[in-house]
Image (cartoon, rainbow, N blue to C red; front, side, top):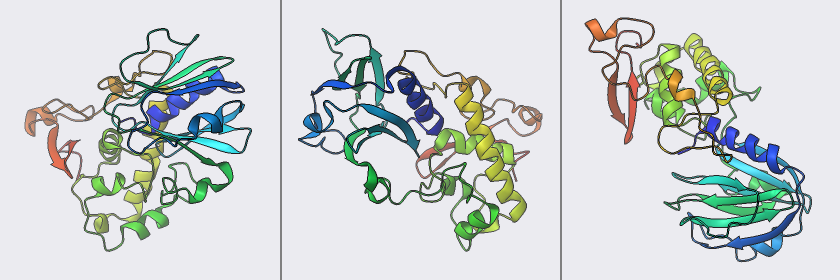
Length: 278
């Protein structure tokens, strides 16, 4: 699933190519994704001009000059592709094709867990997909006091709390492992055991890791690609993710601790250094 850096990368790439474009034609080949694409989706956005693109959590928003915003979520396998002209032979899982006067935006999703819908831009804060989201990692309200209040009296493992989109939004499995490694916090620590200094580290390294990943174009673990076809390179900088048994960058854990370890939390793989993370 694309996490915050990948969604930010997708948004930036599409914005650079299509911002200010006028939507000429829309074709929906498959309406049933995670939820049904609205029956009036095509007529609601055709003829509108793209005025801006932005990200909220793991959602990409395309703002239009007719007062509507397209809401996109990529699920497990969703991706955008940009073509110069309408495809004569669409790919197997091309579910939505949006033609503009600057190029063609195509949504492809093999597993169909993604989402394409729209709502009035003025109502985004109350939209059912967005209304319960927590703070963005760069929100000024994301402080140690905020985090400690969310963690108070919670025995939930801190790794699972970082995946809770109602606390901090946008962090997924890859980056939660990397953040906790940088902060030197064991992923199984209960939330209630985190102190103020550790909360400050979590916030600092959340921002640092995500910023570094965005600068590298995200992480290409399986098939993530930018809409222009390029891949991300942050996987080359991963410290622990998917590196079971290997040496972490900052100690000799492979000699006296068996190297980076993998455990399963909430059905997701977690990677950590047993020497440095306490």
